[in-house]
Length: 240
Image (cartoon, rainbow, N blue to C red; front, side, top):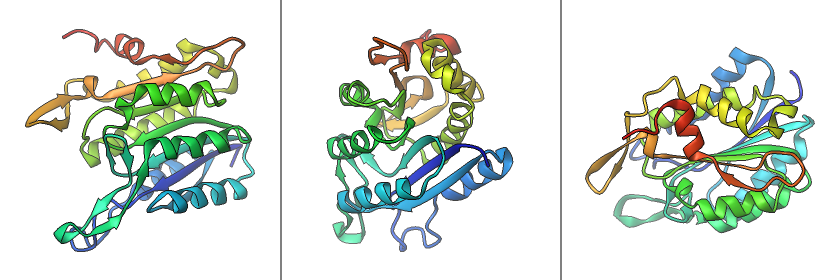
């Protein structure tokens, strides 16, 4: 199966009362795994910071692959991850602060080869200062996220395309800003930058204004960069 592994940590999306079949990103990823045939999936669910920490550490304890990619799929809101309320405002999952999540990711990334992190959550990509700080203090090469409230099905399909192309990068490609941007450009070129993926204050936000790509190429003296504008330019999405 090669030396690639995708670590998937997923929070609850809906209560059983709302969607009894409990939709998950996992079947989509398993389809990609079967199609590509060159990576393994390690899947766990989490509800708050302790279960997130345990899920991440347990998954890493079982991986033998040399190249790892982390996909965190959960509700996001401002600077919180994974919170979910049921009927009558009852708390189903308290979630955790974004800073807590990133601190946990940084801790494990220093001793494992996590190449990239995909945040499949609403609004977390808007916290670019926090994401750049995570890159600065870890060997992670890239982080991708969304800057507004995204629709579940379209964003899951976009995530699938991003993972396919990001995992196709070679180790040496991570030294190149151009190669990293190129992989994400290829992944997103399957979609329209004008597609209204977000709803924000009663207005739609197109995909081209909803994405964030931060990276720190793996080469000497590299510094974290916000490559979102470079990505939009590569796609031809940088015009009004």
